[in-house]
Image (cartoon, rainbow, N blue to C red):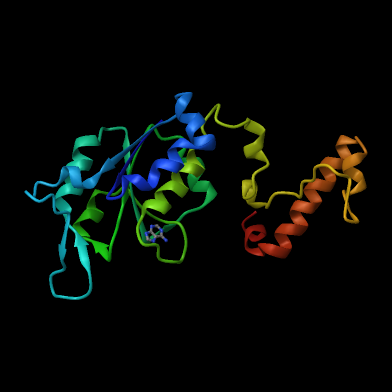
Length: 222
Ligand code: ADE
């Protein structure tokens, strides 16, 4: 898979791209991620990318020209264009599974007080990562990229997705490691029993209990 990210702040992506699982996935060629500076596409002599909004009001508005040129430069028939905005469709694990099957994603990060409304016409999908407003779409694009890359073949062990929270609308079960007794808090005996059927039953029951208590809305979707 290839992911092209359009941003005014490429520096924000350095840690994200060069650490942990994303760095390893890139190195092993499971994904190619390119970060593009929107400013580089500006045709303005001063590389201007935003201006005052028509009709007045607060703040600067991202201009359409650099974003249109960037998308037109990168887009092929296989591309899907995502626009990060708090007004977008709420992002869910299910969407991560869908997007992980795409060949090429172009992700546009909005910034400042907003972007020119005409930029919306470039997007196949507008995405929000939650009901709060970030300073820009960069963190949202990293959240989405991370959630997709970990699902690509070979990036992490396959059965770890099956155990993920939200898989089949259930939260994950509790896990423990050494020691068996930490400050009087004991590992449940069934996990030490070596009895796999009982362990699986216990885990499934814990998933249901936990989901009912914390996210009853998910159980309704099952
Ligand atoms: N840009 C600013 N806030 C955002 C959000 N919640 N989701 C996606 N993009 C954003």
